Amino acid sequence: MKSIYREFLVATLVLISTLAYGADMDHAGIVKSLEGEVTIARNDQTIKAEPNLRLLEGDVVQTGPNGKAGLILEDDTVISMGFNSKIAIKSFMFQPNEKKLSLIASVFHGTISFISGQIAKLAPKQSLIETPYATIGSRGTHILIQVD
Amino acid sequence: MNSIARIALLFLLLALISGCAKKTLVALVPDPDGKTGSISVESAGGSVTIDTSYQATTLGDAKTQPSAPVQMAKETLDTIFKEALSVQPKQPLHFLLYFRQDTTLTPESAKLLPNIIATIQERNSNDISVIGHTDTLGSKEYNTTLSKDRASAVKKQLIKQGAEATAIRTTSHGKENPLIPTADNVSEPRNRRVEVVVR
Image 1 (cartoon, rainbow over the protein chains, first blue to last red):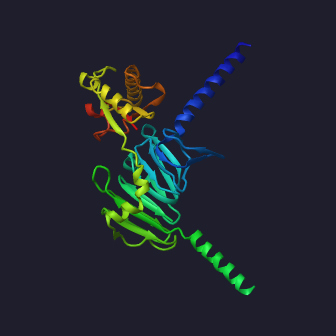
Image 2: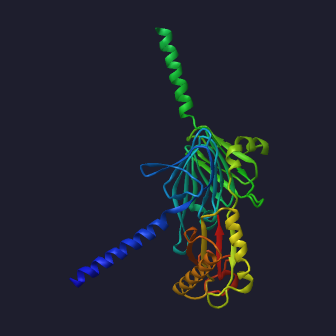
Image 3: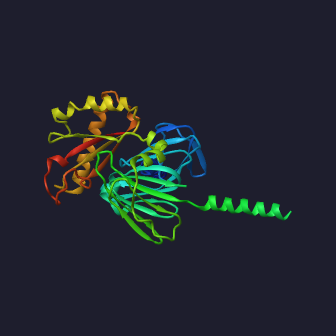
């Protein structure tokens, strides 16, 4: 009986630490500024964006015909989006202590301003912006991207 | 009937062209601190490097090489990206705090705490990172524990001075993200720090 309790306790602790760890691992950044209609597609859900909304790896951010959004990622990357723009945070890992560094952003369409952060400095090869026709690699810089 | 079919075909073609063409423009502009970095733009047809401000490359499809860099007027880019640039958030602010031997802040660093609180309020920030860093002297385990303890101490201080506990995340970058790059096993006081990032 005692051991069952102990197993239950261990399982609960493992679950709690996994959840806490998992939530932290997924965190990619925030929506800092926005105007008009901005939505986040996460898994199969569509979330209406609000200032300070937390972004996770895998999120797809889309602005409407009168929508604009400014995002700040955990590594200081600053992304801003004009009208009718759509991007995805395909991969985001910022854990220098574990040497896990990766940022892959996808631009589907619209007008995007991208100021790279620490991942581009620490691991330039793991910092990429994908567009429908080309992939952009950068080293600590400010890039403007328009995809019709 | 024939002409209707022809018009329909024309519309279909137009829809196809406008729907498929993802004409792409990639431009390099100065960083917020005034420096210019460099980018490479690579398609299946080849790649192009840009390292001069206000130069851009264009692509009409994935198979052709991106165009050679062309100089663009700053005003033209400002116009195309007007909406995006109008909501560009301020760069995150970084504060560096230093310690005595233990987890007590130096008097100079303790004086910075009210500035950090003021910045949090001014930016209405709910995303604050408190990151422990160490120099490369000593074992990874020792440095990770020490930098975590120091980050926790700073978090406590910030909460005491009015910051929201839920807005603060503490992490440790150990010796992997130094301010002053050094070889391994080098004592460098400037790398023994806690960094507070206000977004």
